[in-house]
Length: 240
Image 1: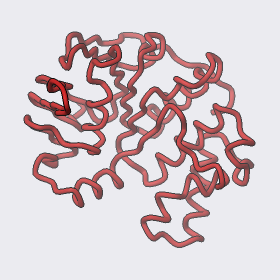
Image 2: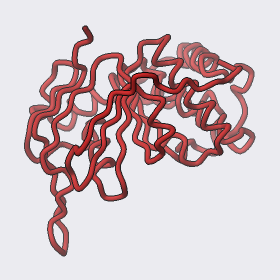
Image 3: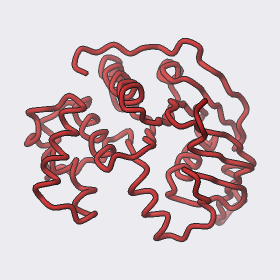
Protein backbone atom coordinates (compact mmCIF):
# COMPACT_ATOMS: atom_id res chain seq x y z
CA UNK A 1 0.00 0.00 0.00
CA UNK A 2 1.33 3.46 -0.94
CA UNK A 3 2.02 5.87 1.89
CA UNK A 4 0.85 9.44 1.88
CA UNK A 5 3.28 11.99 0.47
CA UNK A 6 0.89 14.81 1.42
CA UNK A 7 -1.74 14.99 4.15
CA UNK A 8 -3.94 18.07 4.45
CA UNK A 9 -6.40 18.41 7.32
CA UNK A 10 -8.96 21.23 7.60
CA UNK A 11 -6.89 23.69 5.57
CA UNK A 12 -8.19 27.25 5.51
CA UNK A 13 -6.97 30.27 3.58
CA UNK A 14 -8.56 33.72 3.50
CA UNK A 15 -7.42 36.78 1.56
CA UNK A 16 -8.12 40.26 2.88
CA UNK A 17 -8.36 43.33 0.69
CA UNK A 18 -10.37 46.51 0.40
CA UNK A 19 -13.68 44.64 0.16
CA UNK A 20 -15.11 41.58 1.82
CA UNK A 21 -12.68 38.81 2.84
CA UNK A 22 -12.27 36.07 0.22
CA UNK A 23 -12.42 32.60 1.74
CA UNK A 24 -10.34 30.80 -0.89
CA UNK A 25 -10.17 27.52 1.02
CA UNK A 26 -12.73 26.90 3.74
CA UNK A 27 -11.85 23.51 5.20
CA UNK A 28 -9.99 21.27 2.78
CA UNK A 29 -8.79 17.80 3.72
CA UNK A 30 -7.09 15.46 1.27
CA UNK A 31 -4.23 13.03 0.84
CA UNK A 32 -1.82 12.59 -2.05
CA UNK A 33 -0.19 9.18 -2.10
CA UNK A 34 3.44 8.70 -3.00
CA UNK A 35 3.56 7.77 -6.68
CA UNK A 36 0.02 8.93 -7.40
CA UNK A 37 -1.22 10.91 -10.40
CA UNK A 38 -3.99 13.23 -9.21
CA UNK A 39 -6.13 15.83 -10.98
CA UNK A 40 -7.64 18.86 -9.24
CA UNK A 41 -10.62 20.37 -11.05
CA UNK A 42 -12.82 23.37 -10.39
CA UNK A 43 -14.21 26.48 -12.00
CA UNK A 44 -12.59 29.90 -11.72
CA UNK A 45 -12.68 31.00 -8.09
CA UNK A 46 -13.07 27.46 -6.75
CA UNK A 47 -9.77 27.62 -4.84
CA UNK A 48 -7.66 25.32 -7.02
CA UNK A 49 -4.90 27.90 -7.65
CA UNK A 50 -4.72 28.64 -3.93
CA UNK A 51 -4.52 24.92 -3.23
CA UNK A 52 -1.71 24.55 -5.75
CA UNK A 53 0.24 27.39 -4.11
CA UNK A 54 -0.16 25.78 -0.70
CA UNK A 55 0.80 22.32 -1.94
CA UNK A 56 3.90 23.85 -3.53
CA UNK A 57 4.87 25.65 -0.32
CA UNK A 58 4.64 29.00 -2.12
CA UNK A 59 2.23 30.11 0.60
CA UNK A 60 1.11 28.83 3.99
CA UNK A 61 -2.45 28.12 5.20
CA UNK A 62 -4.07 30.28 7.85
CA UNK A 63 -5.19 27.20 9.75
CA UNK A 64 -5.14 23.44 9.55
CA UNK A 65 -2.44 20.80 9.24
CA UNK A 66 -0.11 20.19 6.27
CA UNK A 67 2.32 17.28 6.39
CA UNK A 68 4.62 16.93 3.35
CA UNK A 69 7.07 14.01 3.14
CA UNK A 70 6.83 13.63 6.91
CA UNK A 71 7.50 17.31 7.61
CA UNK A 72 5.10 19.67 9.37
CA UNK A 73 4.91 22.49 6.83
CA UNK A 74 3.09 24.79 9.25
CA UNK A 75 6.16 24.88 11.51
CA UNK A 76 8.64 25.89 8.78
CA UNK A 77 9.95 29.42 8.27
CA UNK A 78 10.44 31.02 4.85
CA UNK A 79 14.00 29.75 4.42
CA UNK A 80 12.99 26.20 5.36
CA UNK A 81 10.00 26.36 3.02
CA UNK A 82 12.23 27.52 0.17
CA UNK A 83 14.67 24.68 0.82
CA UNK A 84 11.88 22.08 0.86
CA UNK A 85 10.36 23.56 -2.29
CA UNK A 86 13.64 23.63 -4.19
CA UNK A 87 14.62 20.06 -3.30
CA UNK A 88 11.33 18.14 -3.31
CA UNK A 89 8.93 19.97 -5.66
CA UNK A 90 8.97 20.73 -9.38
CA UNK A 91 6.60 23.22 -11.02
CA UNK A 92 5.16 23.33 -14.55
CA UNK A 93 2.98 26.23 -15.71
CA UNK A 94 0.54 26.87 -18.55
CA UNK A 95 2.74 29.47 -20.27
CA UNK A 96 6.05 27.59 -19.85
CA UNK A 97 7.84 30.52 -18.08
CA UNK A 98 11.02 30.06 -20.12
CA UNK A 99 13.58 32.87 -20.46
CA UNK A 100 13.65 33.89 -24.12
CA UNK A 101 17.34 34.85 -24.15
CA UNK A 102 18.45 31.44 -22.85
CA UNK A 103 18.64 28.26 -24.91
CA UNK A 104 16.94 25.03 -23.86
CA UNK A 105 19.73 23.59 -21.75
CA UNK A 106 20.37 26.88 -19.96
CA UNK A 107 16.66 27.19 -19.13
CA UNK A 108 16.65 23.64 -17.80
CA UNK A 109 19.74 24.22 -15.67
CA UNK A 110 18.64 27.48 -14.03
CA UNK A 111 17.76 25.81 -10.70
CA UNK A 112 21.26 24.30 -10.63
CA UNK A 113 22.84 27.72 -11.18
CA UNK A 114 21.01 29.01 -8.12
CA UNK A 115 22.12 25.91 -6.20
CA UNK A 116 25.79 26.56 -7.03
CA UNK A 117 26.30 23.38 -9.10
CA UNK A 118 29.41 23.42 -11.34
CA UNK A 119 29.07 24.17 -15.06
CA UNK A 120 30.26 20.69 -16.06
CA UNK A 121 27.73 18.97 -13.78
CA UNK A 122 24.96 21.31 -14.95
CA UNK A 123 25.65 20.43 -18.57
CA UNK A 124 25.66 16.71 -17.81
CA UNK A 125 22.40 16.78 -15.88
CA UNK A 126 20.72 19.19 -18.29
CA UNK A 127 21.48 16.97 -21.29
CA UNK A 128 20.18 13.95 -19.40
CA UNK A 129 16.89 15.71 -18.59
CA UNK A 130 16.39 16.96 -22.14
CA UNK A 131 17.00 13.45 -23.43
CA UNK A 132 14.47 12.11 -20.93
CA UNK A 133 11.75 14.41 -22.30
CA UNK A 134 12.61 13.62 -25.92
CA UNK A 135 14.59 16.76 -26.82
CA UNK A 136 18.06 15.35 -27.38
CA UNK A 137 19.76 17.48 -30.03
CA UNK A 138 17.71 20.60 -29.17
CA UNK A 139 19.94 21.76 -26.33
CA UNK A 140 20.97 25.02 -28.01
CA UNK A 141 17.60 26.03 -29.46
CA UNK A 142 16.05 29.21 -28.09
CA UNK A 143 12.40 29.06 -26.97
CA UNK A 144 11.27 30.91 -30.12
CA UNK A 145 12.85 28.13 -32.20
CA UNK A 146 10.76 25.47 -30.46
CA UNK A 147 7.09 24.53 -30.81
CA UNK A 148 4.71 25.01 -27.90
CA UNK A 149 4.92 21.34 -27.02
CA UNK A 150 8.70 21.41 -27.13
CA UNK A 151 8.77 24.49 -24.89
CA UNK A 152 6.58 22.69 -22.37
CA UNK A 153 8.96 19.72 -22.51
CA UNK A 154 11.82 22.09 -21.68
CA UNK A 155 9.76 23.40 -18.76
CA UNK A 156 9.13 19.85 -17.54
CA UNK A 157 12.85 19.02 -17.82
CA UNK A 158 13.61 22.13 -15.75
CA UNK A 159 11.06 21.03 -13.14
CA UNK A 160 12.77 17.64 -12.90
CA UNK A 161 16.39 18.82 -12.80
CA UNK A 162 16.63 18.56 -8.99
CA UNK A 163 14.94 15.12 -9.02
CA UNK A 164 11.90 16.14 -6.97
CA UNK A 165 9.41 13.65 -5.58
CA UNK A 166 6.41 15.78 -6.57
CA UNK A 167 5.55 17.53 -9.83
CA UNK A 168 2.86 20.24 -9.66
CA UNK A 169 1.44 21.08 -13.09
CA UNK A 170 -0.86 24.10 -13.33
CA UNK A 171 -2.92 23.80 -16.55
CA UNK A 172 0.08 22.24 -18.35
CA UNK A 173 -1.88 21.78 -21.60
CA UNK A 174 -3.89 25.01 -21.44
CA UNK A 175 -1.83 26.80 -24.13
CA UNK A 176 -1.52 23.76 -26.42
CA UNK A 177 -3.59 22.24 -29.21
CA UNK A 178 -5.21 18.82 -28.83
CA UNK A 179 -2.42 16.79 -30.45
CA UNK A 180 0.31 18.55 -28.48
CA UNK A 181 -1.69 18.20 -25.27
CA UNK A 182 -1.74 14.46 -25.90
CA UNK A 183 2.07 14.52 -26.22
CA UNK A 184 2.49 16.31 -22.90
CA UNK A 185 0.07 13.98 -21.09
CA UNK A 186 1.94 11.00 -22.54
CA UNK A 187 5.17 12.42 -21.16
CA UNK A 188 3.66 13.06 -17.71
CA UNK A 189 2.21 9.54 -17.63
CA UNK A 190 5.59 8.13 -18.65
CA UNK A 191 7.36 10.04 -15.86
CA UNK A 192 4.73 8.89 -13.38
CA UNK A 193 4.84 5.27 -14.51
CA UNK A 194 8.54 4.77 -15.22
CA UNK A 195 10.17 7.28 -12.87
CA UNK A 196 7.76 6.85 -9.93
CA UNK A 197 7.00 10.56 -9.88
CA UNK A 198 4.02 11.87 -7.90
CA UNK A 199 2.05 14.24 -10.16
CA UNK A 200 -0.71 16.72 -9.29
CA UNK A 201 -2.37 18.42 -12.25
CA UNK A 202 -4.69 21.40 -11.96
CA UNK A 203 -6.97 21.46 -14.99
CA UNK A 204 -10.42 22.56 -16.11
CA UNK A 205 -10.43 20.02 -18.95
CA UNK A 206 -12.31 16.77 -18.12
CA UNK A 207 -10.44 14.73 -20.74
CA UNK A 208 -7.09 15.77 -19.28
CA UNK A 209 -8.27 14.83 -15.78
CA UNK A 210 -9.30 11.39 -17.04
CA UNK A 211 -5.62 10.60 -17.66
CA UNK A 212 -5.10 10.63 -13.89
CA UNK A 213 -5.80 7.96 -11.29
CA UNK A 214 -7.98 10.17 -9.11
CA UNK A 215 -9.90 13.42 -9.51
CA UNK A 216 -10.64 15.95 -6.76
CA UNK A 217 -13.29 18.60 -7.49
CA UNK A 218 -13.31 21.96 -5.70
CA UNK A 219 -16.13 24.47 -5.43
CA UNK A 220 -16.21 27.61 -3.28
CA UNK A 221 -13.13 26.53 -1.37
CA UNK A 222 -14.41 23.06 -0.51
CA UNK A 223 -13.76 19.55 -1.80
CA UNK A 224 -17.19 18.62 -3.15
CA UNK A 225 -16.38 15.38 -4.97
CA UNK A 226 -13.70 12.73 -5.31
CA UNK A 227 -13.53 10.16 -8.09
CA UNK A 228 -11.30 7.14 -8.58
CA UNK A 229 -10.56 6.69 -12.28
CA UNK A 230 -10.66 2.93 -12.77
CA UNK A 231 -9.19 3.00 -16.28
CA UNK A 232 -7.23 6.23 -16.84
CA UNK A 233 -6.93 7.30 -20.45
CA UNK A 234 -3.53 6.39 -21.87
CA UNK A 235 -2.07 9.15 -24.00
CA UNK A 236 -0.39 7.93 -27.16
CA UNK A 237 2.90 9.29 -28.45
CA UNK A 238 5.75 8.00 -30.55
CA UNK A 239 8.59 10.07 -29.07
CA UNK A 240 8.78 8.89 -25.44
